[in-house]
Amino acid sequence: MERYDKASLNAANVPLPEFSQNEGSLVATLKTLLFFTVLMIMLPIGLYFSSKVYVFEGTYGMSNRDSYFYAAIVAVVAVHVVLAMFVYVAWNEGSRQWREGKQD
Image (cartoon, rainbow, N blue to C red; front, side, top):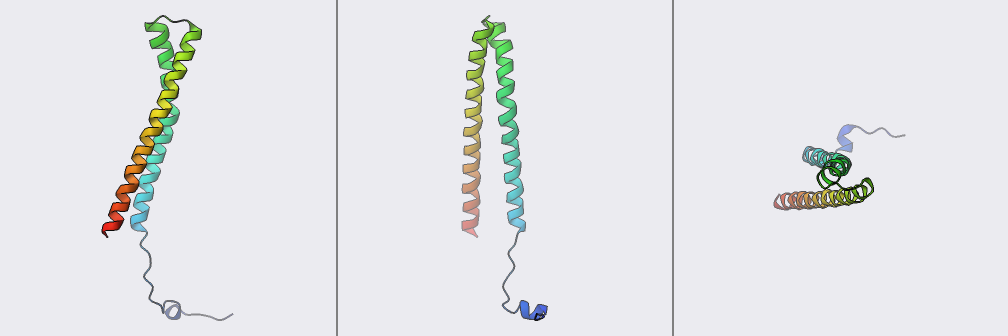
């Protein structure tokens, strides 16, 4: 095998890509994803049980069977709200990064 020295390998003088800006956006994206993942798990489950016990059985005096049904509807609506919020945040974050990249 031939041996190459550093000068001959870097003869093209190709600038190295800067990853520091990409690392910051990657960390921000992962934090956003982690936040919405936790929210997607905790919010529907919490709303299901709290609305079942406190709202439908406690306040409205519904039977156990009816409160299951309406609490499930509340949980499904919560899932859709979290998904819509995630899409909105991801869309705005992507367009912001695109605008910043375009101005450079």
